[in-house]
Length: 320
Image 1 (spheres, rainbow, N blue to C red):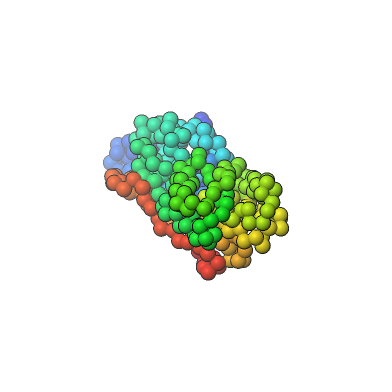
Image 2 (spheres, rainbow, N blue to C red):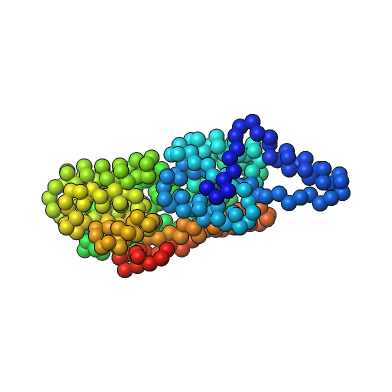
């Protein structure tokens, strides 16, 4: 990813090198040479398109700033984030960026804090040891898509929800959607599914939706599918089409508006709406936030929101 910097255990501590260079320059009466900032980006979710776009935006801005960036993917292993954080702290990075629930990596955050290394969240969550979290407003996005669903089905019918509580930015979306649907007495959430996201989430979402369709065979027995992000929505769409039930008018919404989702929405089928997060903007803003911290600025705004937009068939084909 970008100018990913690959390191291994046993390499010389980068901070020691910096100290030695500075000392030599001082002894010689010369100004210390400018060294590139070293930043580690750590996530278990690089298989997710949204995370890939965040990282692309971050590394693009980091290139402009002249940084060296080490992108570390723990491939779905949240616990491994802690050990990787400990590794990069030992290596002497200048900052760490995370895309994971801070509550699950407390030991890693503490290691960074003890070393005086700032940590910034990139669509992560809030924590006293995270200097700032750059994200979209998940509350607003979830409310917009849930209200869209409620309006499209006339305030009544059975709704299937795809959620993912282990990750705070997605967990809050489910909470808000629950609250919206709870305001409609004739809407019933018949299932709340947490798909396996190891391969991105589409395959397992399709399998689970297929089982739910089989359990509810009558036309009209499922009015809508609300998904907390696009992968489950796409999986549900595949299941509905494969079951020959696309003509029932089952409304599907997602969040992220990734290219595959936009294509499905533009086609005018069951997948009707998503919300376009500014992935590149989140990544770039996260990089700018890191720079502010490295410049010694105190970040007062602990959650930095980047605007998002509702995508329907009317604007799905527009350039991102």
